[in-house]
Length: 429
Ligand SMILES: *[C@@H]1O[C@H](CO)[C@@H](O)[C@H](O)[C@H]1NC(C)=O
Ligand SMILES: *[C@@H]1O[C@H](CO)[C@@H](O)[C@H](O)[C@H]1NC(C)=O
Image 1 (cartoon, protein in one colour):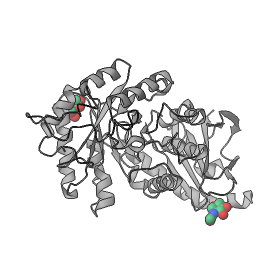
Image 2: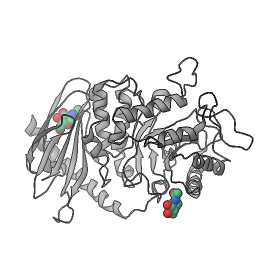
Image 3: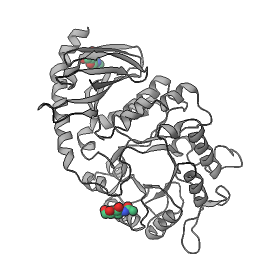
Image 4: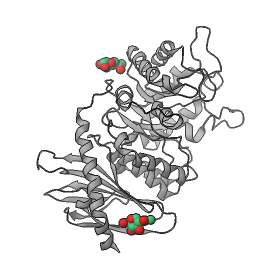
């Protein structure tokens, strides 16, 4: 079974790999949003997927959108080792505001739920080595009906800067899609004019791709935003996770073109630790989010999370793949109903050594898409584009186990559980 599979793949896989690396070399000429932020994908915690718009603190005091929730999560980042491995942001999503602006048109946090204001929360984060992010919507109202950004761009940007905010997510509910290019571009300039460096997270292409026929101006988006949403809100189940991964793979030639330090696709939050994803499925998300260089924002309850999920989130080796300083995103090089294979170039890399492409280290991800039964696959490394005159030190990332040293002509064989992943690094020897 294995050897026939290997033959079957070779020509197909080589073609795809070839395309992938052409794209990577073109990428080098791009310009960049010049705020110096997010040279590697941002990491942290964001409220939306897990806590949504729960504003009923009198019923669920621990689970409502409030100062307490964000402080609780910040405390966990610090005490449970998350900050230490890179999760250093706490981001507020929708539903933090009062229903109306102040007399001088400023945004006001809900006074019951945020009794000490947002500046207080920012100070709380900063004194713990964390950063604070906040949410607004380019519209007349936010998605959940709170005061929106349109007409108040300057005052809101200044308010966020005064509060010492570090990251802004701008959504685009209820807004004509043809106005988004100018709206997002202008607000980026307004943010810049405050003089405070703030990560700019844009939902801009999501609304163009999925609610209209407008083709996103990817160059403009990547020049103006640090991260940008590409697909629907994600929820904690395998079907949603796979659909999100498939969207990235199906559109990788377009999506990857503008990615690099300071500019990343955002396929939405990490679901790990929530009901709805198994341990194997959680490793798939963590592995693929790292291979595609996605932001790592957990949306879970860090006060109630079991050790097996924590281990996935705190695995330094998978995080190192995500945070690789070259910032080259991975590509899906094989895809059918059963199996996906992804390959991401990593440091150390020696592009000038050999004339050939591919003299670099890699992460390799093998995903079993089936819900029933383990699969076993074998493929020659060179068929995945791993060609070098040297050899690779192979290692299983989640099992934290060395495999062996391999050359391009060697076959790597992996057994992958149902809806599971085998993630390996192949580091130049
Ligand atoms: C504003 O933009 C300029 C030019 O791109 C850049 O040099 C500067 O760092 C930016 N400032 C902030 C606060 O983002
Ligand atoms: C997917 O590809 C693998 C390797 O070529 C093969 O063994 C498997 O049967 C394929 N699955 C489907 C559903 O075509």
